[in-house]
Length: 122
Image 1 (cartoon, rainbow, N blue to C red):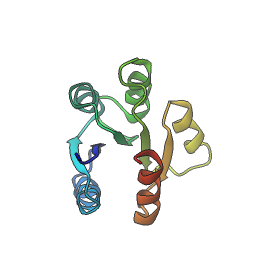
Image 2 (cartoon, rainbow, N blue to C red):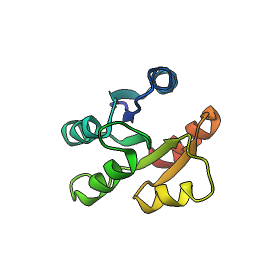
Image 3 (cartoon, one colour):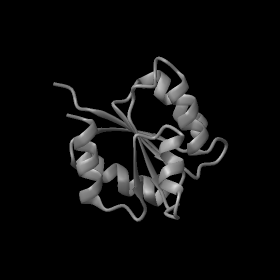
Image 4 (cartoon, rainbow, N blue to C red):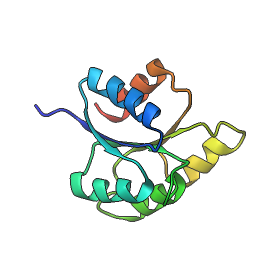
């Protein structure tokens, strides 16, 4: 059986390393993108099982990237979990309105992350 593939779209190198290390330890295959444009290209090319999307990204922010992803009939079924330091009132709702399937605020609680991954990747 092949391992589930997760695309992490994150521009902060420290966060990318932490998230990737955790995902690898949980036996996921990890793809990495550093901005929304690269993330969309990789989603089209690799069709990941799930996307962890930072919302504050260079070139194309996570809100816009998610809207574009969800407007593409071939990609819209891929679950997107927003990862963000935007933990203000209304930010979770904004992320869900943009098309994110769920939301995790930073700093990331690893138990919460694992639970949400299990929810979307059987």
